[in-house]
Image (cartoon, rainbow, N blue to C red; front, side, top):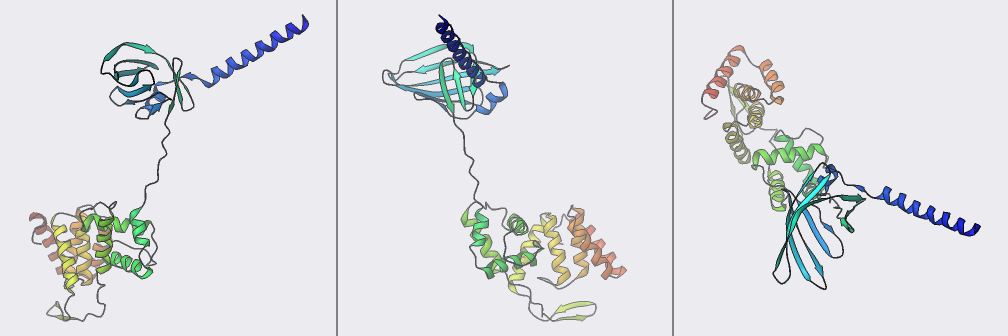
Length: 317
C-alpha cells in the first residue's frame, strides 16, 4: 500500500510537470504577433497557406484520400481573436463552404496551433544585398580607381584623398554624379555601373599649364580648351537651366577656375549666388571667396546678372 501511494504521487508529479510545461510553451497568439505572421508561409505535412494582407487566406492541403484541395477565405483578427470563413475546392472540382466562426490560435516559438493541428511558420533569412557598385569599382586597377576619384574631385563631388579605396565618400560621390549627370540610372544593373565608371575614367583632368592672358579687363585663353571640358560644361549648363542647384554650383566652380569656360569671376559669382538661392549650402563659401576677389563694379554686375537669370528662369544665362 505504501508503494502504491508513492507511485500515485509520482504519476501526479509527472502529469503536473507535463501540464506546466504545456502551459509555458503554448500561449495565446496576440494581435501584434499575428501581424508578424501575415505574408509568411504556414505549413505542416499536409497543408500550407498564408494570411495575406487585406484579410484573405489562401492555401492548399494534400492527402492520400482526397488528393489536393485548395481553399480561399476571409479572416479577421481583432482583440486577439481569430475569425474566418472559407471555400474549399476539392480535387474533383466540388466546393465546400465553411461557416464564419472564431477560434483561438496558440503560439510556441515559430509554431502555431489551430485546435489540434500544429503548423510551422517560415523564418525568412534576409540576404544582404550585394553592393554591385563597390564590387565593380574594386575590380578596377589601382590606377583606374584613383582616376575615377580624381575625375569626381575635379567635377566637385569628391573631397577626400585620392587613394583608390571605396569608402563612404567615394560611394556618395559616385551616386551623386550618377544622379546629376546620368539621370539617376539604376545602379543595381551592371550595364549602368559600367557606363558610369567608363564615363568617369574617360574624363580628362584640366591642363594646369594652360596660359591665360589678360586684355582690356577680359581674360582670353590662348590654349584651346579641351573638347571633353566643353562637353562637360554643356551638360552642366543644361542641368543648371533646369534649376539644379548642384549644377549651378559646379558652373560657378568652373568659371572660377577657368575649366570648360574662360575664367570669369562675375559669372562664377552669379551661378554661386543662384545655387545658394536654391538651397545649396556648399555654394555659400565659394560665393564669399569670390566676393573678396571682385571689385564693387564686378559685384554689382554679378548681382544684376543673377536677378536677370532668375527672371528668365535660368534660360540662356
